[in-house]
Length: 295
Image 1 (cartoon, rainbow, N blue to C red):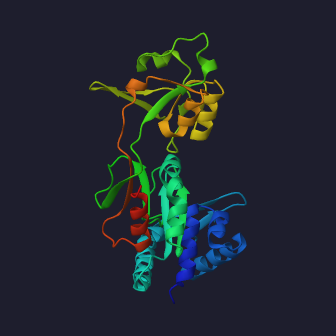
Image 2 (image 1 turned 135 degrees about the vertical axis):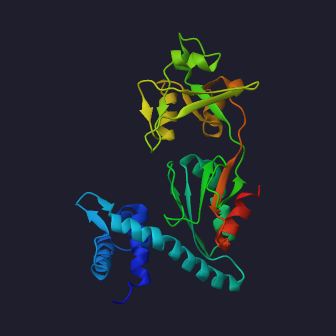
Image 3 (image 1 turned 180 degrees about the vertical axis):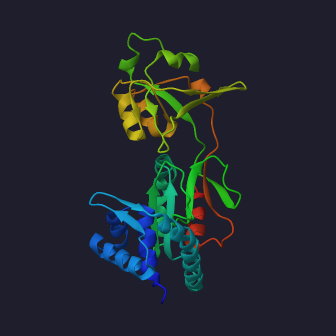
């Protein structure tokens, strides 16, 4: 039986990566029905079902998971080989796929995105925002960005973006008639806007001062999973938020938010861009690293 063609396997990888025919079709510039037809043909050729689908959702099967685990790295190797051939032209070209948390998208990627695209007109940049933990190799990404340097052993990490610092903020109206917290433990007496990770875990607020460090799991009547909603809740006087300093600096400067516990919020290391160390770094990724590390 002949092997399935490479385009069909690329379609399978795209659908599995997005867990959606619609999103995969948008990425590839075709209709969802066309992708569904390709997947049906691939399933017929292999003789197994790769996705369980209903009118509202799709879910990869166990057989699909096994295929994804094997062909994800293999297709990455093929793409790398093609990229190496393109490099003979002397300039980066091709697609660079990044998986980044939403805060890193705002603080690292957005400020240099236009500069990168202007400098490398033959590179296509695809950025997927995801606050969960993602296996970037299996999901078909060239690199990821995350806070913290604790990564798998076969990953190389590069510091990118400015140093990080968090801020505890609330609206002026929230503090009317309330005392401001002086130490982190005082937050238990306040309405704190909680944050839920995609994994289901509740975000902990971290503090440190003079060698003393602590993490508090705080949440009030409002728990959100989107930092824009968290900032909006703080601006609306619904409670205190623990958020990246750079994301609320303008609100603080305009007096729309009041900062507390500033001496308990230390400067932290920057984000880290990470990628598989066992592979040759593609030219678009090298160009991105060079750009993001330039002021």
